[in-house]
Length: 123
Image 1 (cartoon, rainbow, N blue to C red):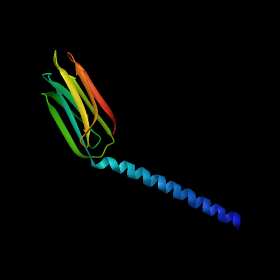
Image 2 (tube, rainbow, N blue to C red):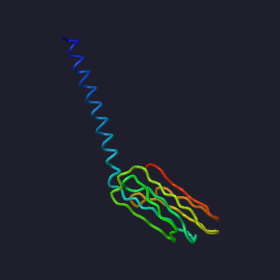
Image 3 (tube, rainbow, N blue to C red):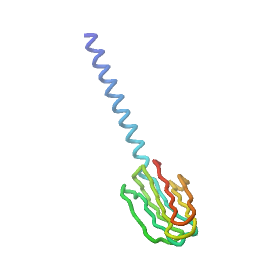
């Protein structure tokens, strides 16, 4: 009987630990759902092509965009953020930025003809 009781307690402890891990994982994933993500591209290039990932996990492309350019998503549910910008001209500089909840998350700069910049990461 004593051995049987220890097995029940051991199984209950394991179940409790597994449920605790699942709960904590769910809480950390939920933290990303209310984020505000802002993408920005600045510089003196005449025209750029831009690709970003969206708040639903897809991508959006913008072609022959003048600078400065800005896009903001509220309630961003994805943990991964991404922006790519390509200079379409013979000269110019492009600066790209990702802000999460108003704070700079990542940035990059590129200069020269037909240059590009990309930044990404898990926020």
